[in-house]
Image (cartoon, rainbow, N blue to C red; front, side):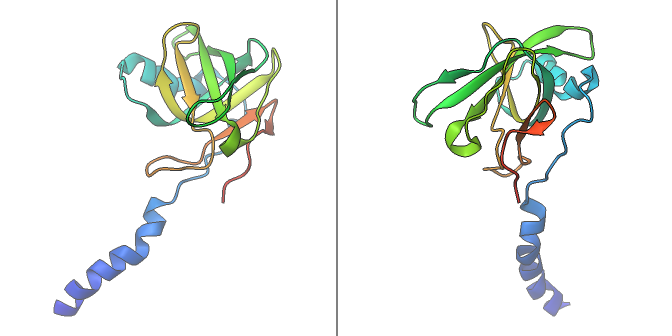
Length: 157
């Protein structure tokens, strides 16, 4: 019994990477309102906190715009028209970090799917999804952006 007690911390430490590794979640096969259920749940919660592992899909309402500078470098913002399961249609911003994701741009009416950290906004969009890159913190799966069915972000290991 004593040997087991001594071995337990080692076994837990040795298996920690298996528990902490981010998952690779596949993109949706098609963009249906049900894909946006997590986003709808986030909106209905009214939380002021960012929420990991939110998927969104919709159509770009305009050309992606550049957000220059800032403490984390340049970002590109794509605004989507998104249909929710409850029948609402909202605007959602997908924000990519040029340094972590590469430059990601979409044109009007492009079909866009994104997976990352969701947050609530005010103004032109009701919500946003950022951290669409390989996971940088515990609890977050690897993020991504797909435009017209093609991966726009680098693959994660």
